[in-house]
Image (cartoon, rainbow over all chains, first blue to last red):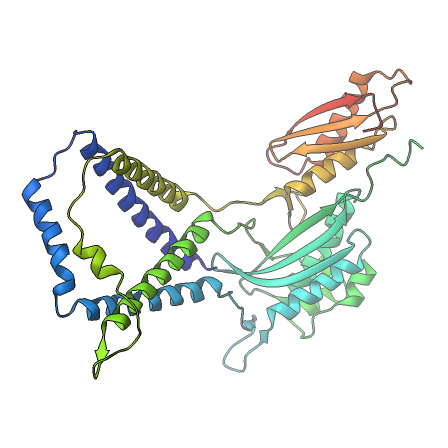
Length: 191
Length: 219
């Protein structure tokens, strides 16, 4: 879900919330007689509402609003379901003579395989994602809780160094997520 | 690290490659660490609910058009209109306890929507920062932090089992020791606390660690 979609969500939900909050508050104030509505104009409003179904364009008006509602709703659902995809990323050295491009997903996958080959990491997955507008190679490494964090850091740094070479100067960021599992609860030294 | 170098090397030669030869570790790392991940905000779910409501409303409006439209004397869809009678019977709002209840409910719903719209995205992980020369930090979720803390407690010889709860600010570690051995529990708690602090030293700021020593190992 992109930042733009979330921003639109926030604005729409905020406006809807303010509308409901305002309507509810005004009605409560009116109910406890802290607020008097201008009687004649309210009565006129209800008169207009009652006469609306008699209007020749009543059902067509409803239809147009209905079509627009359905279209907007379907479009919004589609936008929410869509995932950000990363196309090939241009590498440094790209110029008039030719273009160097790399498939980030393949890079992420390969880096994860490298990481998983080391001792401290049981398994690893690499994905390329768009996160808040940045292209990010994300490595998810599963380790046991008894892992030596310093050794793990060395392994990860080596992999990241490989990535740095590979992605030389491209605006790609890297993130390492640890999925720490606990293999044992008992202390093996006690037995 | 030899596996690292053999398992994966860049396919295309770059300037850095020539400098580095077969030792990528010697290359100055210029990778940009990404910001910690964020989860999906609650407002997205609220928005989906609103969108589904809009879809339902649109369907009802379209149905109203179809049941009330006749082509060559034949209505398109058989059925009674729903909205026209409702609109035609609207006479006004009266002061009643029902009106009050509905108004309060609507206001509270609006408040919930406003709060959800303004709530920031959740951050499901904490960052474990390595040494100064480390190229990148680790992002660990709360379960991972408690697993690391509980495992660190097993570094104390007297501890039989351990578990931990809490998160990035405060970690509570429960350890069990042999009740018949007569250990100095406060000393054990101190050692456990030190080991857990050490294991989680990458957290900024470091968490407060509380240790509970239990004498019953059957838990």
